[in-house]
Length: 195
Figure 1 (cartoon, rainbow, N blue to C red):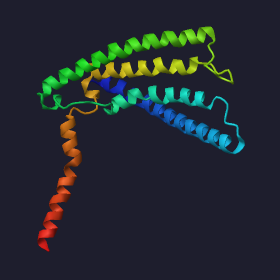
Figure 2: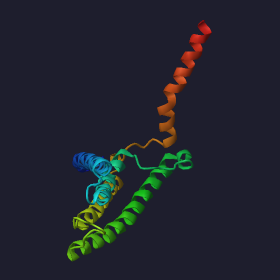
Figure 3: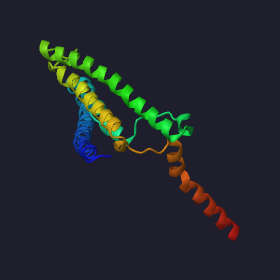
Figure 4: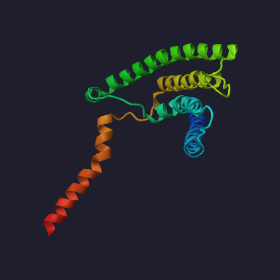
């Protein structure tokens, strides 16, 4: 991988670390809002106003912002039952095709969600049933931002394959991750035979 590709990947990793930290804080805030609302509803017969709406808006940030980080870790769901047994070169071509498809699909979602978010901002849209007159556009704006950042990660991984998380197959990873179980079983059998 080129120096430039490594540099871009490092910068993205640093941004991802900040984004993931923010997503963790927002998750804690969502839990706190829910907790305070349940306490208020249970003991004071008065939940926090717009508690469900605030939770929904925070959920958008928690889901969409860390997508690039998840991609960098190789932690998105993959079904590799058949592809694990294909030659390595074919697997690399399929990964590249998947990255291209991801850019096209999620790039179009960036455009569509940006239009919706901008319209919400432009019209001063208020969230449905909001008692506090909360605006919809901040949560809607996080969707295209998170998706665009994810698309950039796709592009970096496509142009510099060395930035992809690991080129081992899921099958090989599962074998590696469970190899200690076999070692433990053999050790247990050996100890039982010694008795």
